[in-house]
Length: 225
Image (cartoon, rainbow, N blue to C red; front, side):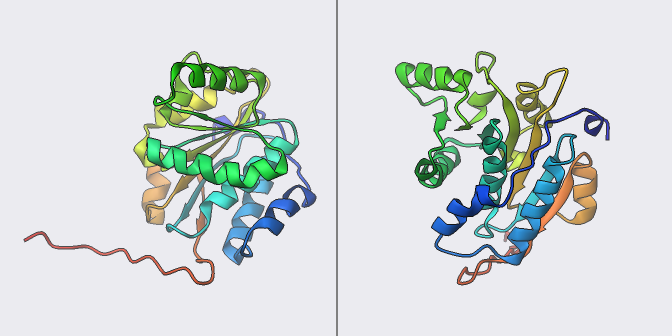
């Protein structure tokens, strides 16, 4: 792929980076989550931009996988941006990451169109100064949002954005020397053949195992009479 010909900063975090988060979780990672984390770590260590789609049902644990990818980048001094398609989902992610990361001393900044003027000014200032974890809506794409060292872009529900929007956020961290890694999350079941055509630029990982105690998600088709 053309983009993978560009360099990216290799991310080589050791297992100790994740230990405090994993110990704080009230559950163990599933084998599927561990496999996908390994695939992500291998991608980010390779020296070219990761382009990976992680597919999994609601409740399969995509968010904690994304958090581990973020921690690996942050441990090396990089900055991470997570973009969600709605205010509600972005706020949910902000609460989740704040609950995990605040205890680890990792600053999270939230940016959306609903912020007041003072809150927005402060968020933009912290992002430009290098706040390690940035979460928001498409407001993250706006021209006056400046990142200090954006090395990982996480997009939740890619199909709710245009490919151009994903690339716009990536370009905010791109330079002549490096391009950010990209991690795409989706709960939408995507047949492999469709994934290959619709997401031809992405490697695909599937979290095909629910954590113990989670109710399986059923996908059904209903006839409209």
